[in-house]
Image 1 (cartoon, rainbow, N blue to C red):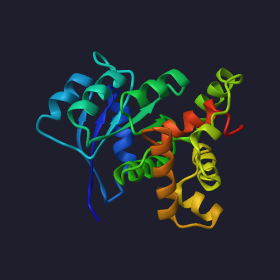
Image 2: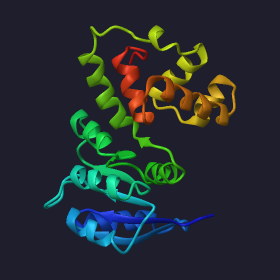
Image 3: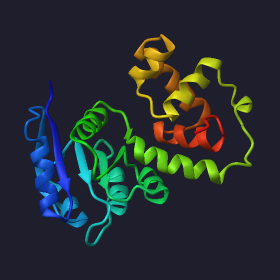
Image 4: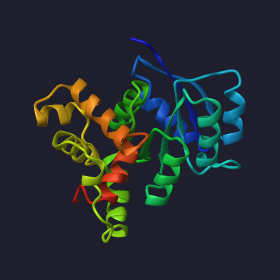
Length: 217
């Protein structure tokens, strides 16, 4: 099993120490560097290329959003996981636009943090249920009067089912179990949905489903 190399970027030493302590007994995960600013992070990346960066939004100098944009452009293969006290719609959506692949609140559990790390490492995206609920509710209120465009995009019945379950936070395994299909088939359906709707990732699928009232929370 390949090692997951991580850089911690947070301006609070105690918080970085806490994350290191949480992950210390996970053999697969190694903290290779830690930094306290966006500028320091960009400098470290010249000589150290991690698999994942765990990044705070509020730091001196470059914010986590600003540095995420730079990293996504220069090092697109590096996955960025935001760990922040800010979980409102504005922060989450700006992070998605900046290329962030995961977003967790700072009071997340060890289990969810490890789950998010593994999901990103395997090529997926991870947005905590708390974060998802916050911006989903906001988007529902903002798009109440917008027309449902489902029919115009010619999704199949199965694709609509997968889209609904994915938008509500279901993992590929959970969706597969619920629909009695394989995880591989779920992944194939999600790929087709994103192609048809011209979406880039699961986060955009969530936004699309809410905007077009495909899900109702």
